Image: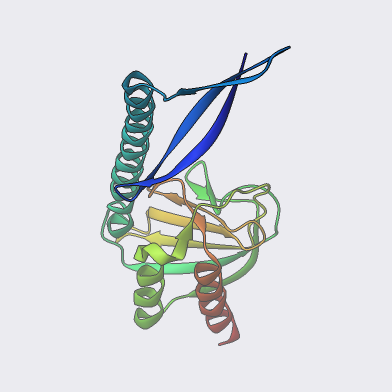
Length: 196
């Protein structure tokens, strides 16, 4: 005996399959109708609902995690600062500040940002469209921004790699990668700062 599926058309707008048991014997073909029972439908529905619940939970936790990370964007830097200095970096792995001091990566080129440039930089860093979920393979930064307090102490810094779209900040605003738009905006502000 073999089970074959055939459609019986539409019932109440829903197509329901009918299965036939066929038996090829010496006397010919015997066809017996066989309709899947309610147990099959309940099991299928239960499986679909289980998958849907899992998807909903995954989406819920993804949104919660993204919102939790986004909340740190507006907190950068955490302390008040007096001035911001942009430093050109050599392109080797590392950050602009290491062990509380300027890194060996600083090439000597530096520019103090004016108040408009500081506002623009902070607006870019606080904007969620600046970031994406891409992956990075390198971290060879060419620019770093250092936020100094009243006593010339470092209260925050940000190091950016335009090749791999990665950004590292202290205090940490989360594990973010830069979006195309974010890279374009940060590259434009860097160009403006160092062309003066």
